[in-house]
Image (cartoon, rainbow, N blue to C red):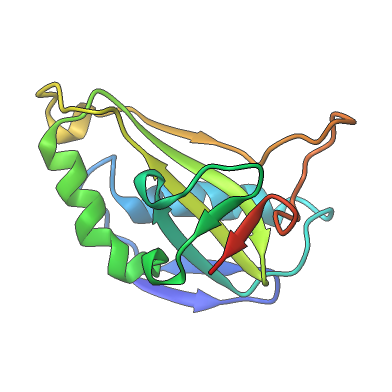
Length: 144
């Protein structure tokens, strides 16, 4: 899998997903959606964090050490699929420090679902009080 930088984001080329739940496939879906938007801040990298590593407060706190590149996170994504969780959420949290921040949420325990049948739900970014998409996540998320 090759991740190549583009002006507003990353484009994933040379994909050959092993299954419908390949991380690359889902990142491509998110990136394709972002390419069609003109209202997002510039970003030049993707980082992935697991929901369990986010300290949820008034302003969420994420340790920088828990941020992974797509290449580094891909084996962990497959590991989570292999555990057979009933679902996985891939959340677009928005842009922080020119970084597209995605998080992975899973249920507390696996349910034995085969990896190819685990539903991967894509969501985000959040809406602000005015009902518009909040791409700039710097007011909601602090990287430490």
